[in-house]
Length: 199
Image (cartoon, rainbow, N blue to C red; front, side, top):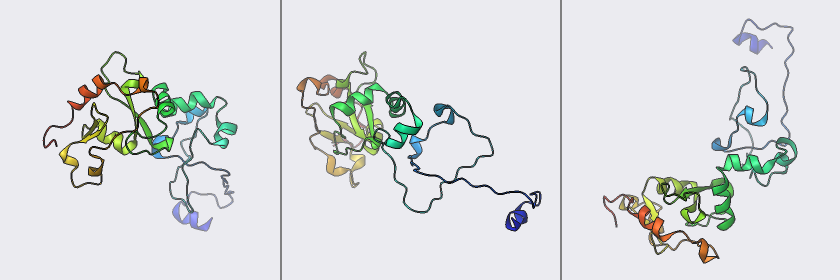
């Protein structure tokens, strides 16, 4: 109490100091944080959040967490879809189950990318690729694409980076050929690859 009063003289010396003990805590990535309203509650403005932790914090897979299933959401599936970015991503997760380029299979870092976001059937799984978050960033920046032969194509901007080994790599495809990415959509997307210094 004396140390607190040295910071704030307005603290009553007879005040009781409370504490909160977290049990079975689940840690989210920054993008995985939820608004209090989404959990049906609110927090007072005086509540503070600190990211300094001792020990090892493990990010929980929302879809597999028993704690979340039991304590947070009575309807896990609808909330998981809300967080994950919708039914389009869910369908790609079911079809591919991993990043089509790197093979990464941890759902928390996988994103749904539209090959041609302007087409009439934008949400058709044949118009999508499941990509690891960093690969998705490069894809959205048109520094990386997949050609009509289902091979990775990079802009030369990525030369001498850790990504250059992906050039020409065959992507993972669904077992069902009817679900392969649309060659027409891939062709249109390839035209967006940054042309300056293209391989």
